[in-house]
Length: 112
Length: 458
Ligand code: SF4
Ligand code: SF4
Image 1 (cartoon, rainbow over the protein chains, first blue to last red):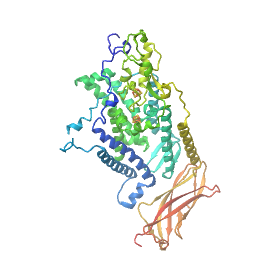
Image 2 (cartoon, protein in one colour; image 1 turned 180 degrees about the horizontal axis):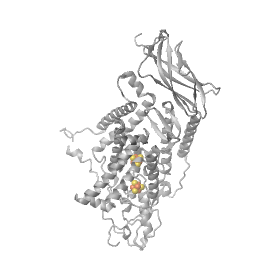
Image 3 (cartoon, chains in turn orange, cyan; image 1 turned 45 degrees about the vertical axis):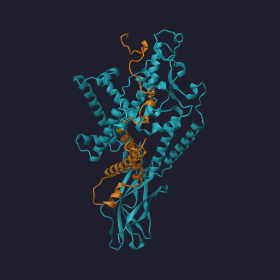
Image 4 (cartoon, each protein chain N blue to C red; image 1 turned 90 degrees about the vertical axis):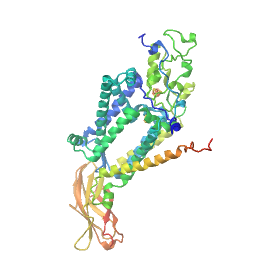
């Protein structure tokens, strides 16, 4: 046991760098997270919207009234509906992310 | 574009150290329980019927012998509201137990961590492996981890679809590569989401994507259970030999071993105080307790406590906030249960004929054909008859005129509704309401409105 410096009981202070204090941690950590931050809430909203929408409206009825000649199963109807809701909500989130980020000023000469 | 990029730090993978202890055992049990339910429930049958089946194609949910229809949307809404309230209630009482124990994100991440542990070894070994070159061992270990992860994810995705389509039939079709396009899509989608979120994103979902992590603080007060480091007792921290009286050296009880940091799945130091990153998994409590045991110090330097308790004030469980939640929850649950108990025990569903919109009969009436799906949801057999309401002169014919259904039976009955085209000015169609009534004096009724289609442009 003595040979292991990290053994807590021997009390040697940690060899590893301690984690950054949360206050000093940059946020957001990576640009890719903005994508996540758009897609995930949009996913949740789309789920909710799909549930509410299709509980009132049968995709079969929709199909009969719009594309009666097409073979679209209910499963396909729900799925397409969900994906559409997701796309719309995701797009809206993406625009919001764009707007809340500070506009890029470092090209302007006059800005101090 | 290089300047704004520096705002974003590169992500360093967190390798939580494995630890044993009370809270980790509790977590393990809940993981088995919850995932056990997830993987087993679709296979369970009660009296030949699946115990849980969200039969979307047929627009009905089967839950433990009860069948719910789109008309029962109210119950679904109620259930969601009850769940949300219950979450608020639990959060205000005991903090983020949802996160630590029940959130699918943490539960699946835990399982993925186990698989990582089996294939890549303990924390130190994993870190070394990550730093090291791509030799045969690294390829073998990382490769087998991927195989485990992928197989598990695929099975997860498959199980997910099994909630919506009878799973034994699904398995048979999957084995013959005959899954429908959407079934394939959703199982791959869910499988991939599991793989990606539990394998790679992990704590970052909680830190950067989860809405609950951001608003849960609003439900906290000074009497909410939190996981906290007892600063008074621990500081000043510092290393020491076993058996030395810390007071002599002017030290607190924290030996600064950093174990609580190493076990933390979100990579924070609980000694810095309560942070939104903390998912209340209790790993740091177990870690610190194990150290306290070895040092012969009393346990609980890191423990479940409340802000009030930390400052020596009493903590109450019963307080306005919890009373409010309890009252609301009780009211909603009672309302839901009463509603369920009083549901009309007959259900009529009307499917319109897909092939012909309408037909003109020999005597100049417009006729629409339907399939009535009649379900007797009561415990005994009844005989039912039908009537219709709508524009003047509307008539209904069913085949047969009266139907007898045994308890729980569903039958499809062909039906025709006829209307004089002069009775309505509406173009395209009118609403008619079909009422089904028990004919044996039990006075069970149900009704359903459907569209009667008339010729366009008349
Ligand atoms: S922070 Fe969000 S994603 Fe993470 S465990 Fe809690 S609820 Fe789940
Ligand atoms: S600080 Fe402790 S309880 Fe919080 S996430 Fe880290 S190990 Fe879990």
